[in-house]
Image 1 (cartoon, one colour):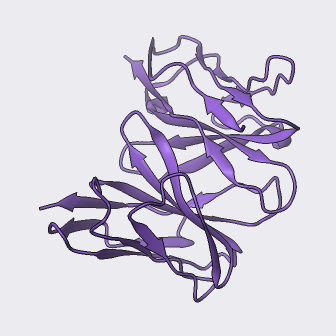
Image 2 (spheres, rainbow over the protein chains, first blue to last red):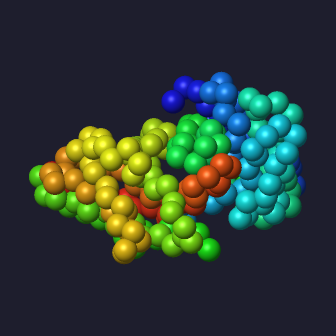
Amino acid sequence: DGGITQSPKYLFRKEGQNVTLSCEQNLNHDAMYWYRQDPGQGLRLIYYSQIVNDFQKGDIAEGYSVSREKKESFPLTVTSAQKNPTAFYLCASSKLAGNQPQHFGDGTRLSIL
Amino acid sequence: AQRVTQPEKLLSVFKGAPVELKCNYSYSGSPELFWYVQYSRQRLQLLLRHISRESIKGFTADLNKGETSFHLKKPFAQEEDSAMYYCALKGRGYGQNFVFGPGTRLSVLP
């Protein structure tokens, strides 16, 4: 689904460093989401946003921050407070109506040096 | 609380055999149910949703409200079906969030 673009594909972080993962969508979706995907644990919701300039914590928000200044963009910052940041991060978007599915990006793999 | 369970982490079947990936959910109301698939080196994508009552790539899934299940089935598995499968739930109504199961890795052996 070319409507959601995540960058970069691979990202390396040094200890104590903040890094920002980009997510852009051109599907005109109101809602955007960030998930963390770890082996055997499925997708865990980090943050989500249903409207510009508003966002909500998901199940594992500690050590992460987001912004939603534009409808198309929902960047995720992994801060130094996140103790175990090595993971695969997925961004998704959807319409808000109940029966509408999510559309996912290709993901960003973050590794700690 | 909303919850989705997929009891099998890994399911291996031989090519041509029937396959059933189990999904159970808990939700106080009538949810929307989805199956997502992630093939190797590809993005997570929607496979099917219960409201559509469709068959995609030979897969079907029936919502059983009595058993709170949404099992994914295919009568004859193919090697290209090997992938990670996630069952997901979304509450009906505007602005509801998704809840994903832990996933089942399907391996179709030749």
